[in-house]
Image (tube, rainbow, N blue to C red; front, top):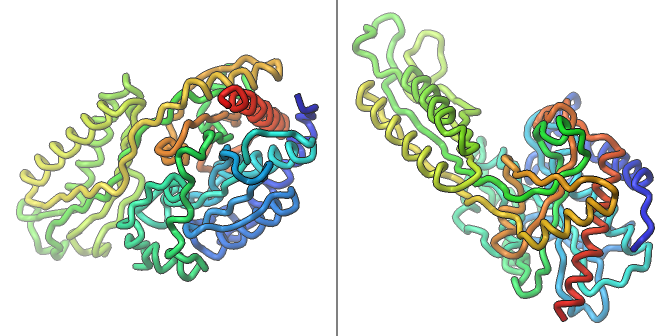
Length: 420
């Protein structure tokens, strides 16, 4: 096995994370959305790190930065490592970025050690994992997995800019989109390091965990159509108030989420736009977001059916229209048992208990599971906080995660040799 110093690995990765976090659209908080100038600057920094680590670098048609550690004649299969570099608005420093940095440091460690691997290692820095700028998600990883939906390229952001137009401005060539795909027969698997985004590991005093499955998720844009009117002259009983109807629907979503808690169901409305948005006008239209997740697919489907039924009842009673347009629907993605075992062995090799747990958050692994076997390492985060500037993982825990990733690559290399 390669000699490893988790403390040094963690210090290096932490310094890189701090440098990456300085790239933002706003001076006082971290916001780095897909295909923005800030994304471009972050991608260039990541590419520079990859080059300095001895990787061959390219950027594909969906703006994924890809660094490859080649072996032999270049005909070997590929093990994929990575995560994403886009963020939510007012983000923390670790979500996504940790997985990219950990993968680069791990690949560099393997190269410097002179490790002989039976496969190539490709590090991917994806975009659009968060789905904040456009009503899409996982565009970068979906392209690599070969399941990109062309219709998503015509979706538009709040300024009516399409994904297709944004990619062109960014400098990507969509004619080469097919070349982003890795053939299934050429893929060994996909590994990702990520903060837990929950409190379990911290509560149990464990720095690392091994993910067993990624929860399925449905996202939708809900449009409530009423009739705008003068706030002083339209009697209460004659109104078609879109905001009042939308508010009732939000409470219904919350109630349905609580009812499904036994199956880890969660249902969230995180954004609402009211039109015309004047103090003296009855709201005529409301657009709101919907996010429904569960640890298995059946409860999520049942919840969506219940939400649609509640929407129909509210619309009929209040005299409004309610349209629910699904923009994202991903099945639960189980992590591959053989890779879960390899990751568990890698964590145990560091003298740590290999705690297994599921992920309630979505990840690029959901797209990559359509291509190949997947596995994830979770890193303890303070307070379980994520999507928040208070997000934090210690350099010590990060170093252990990088070391576990290196050990996992070694374990998969042994299995690949046996396979031959």
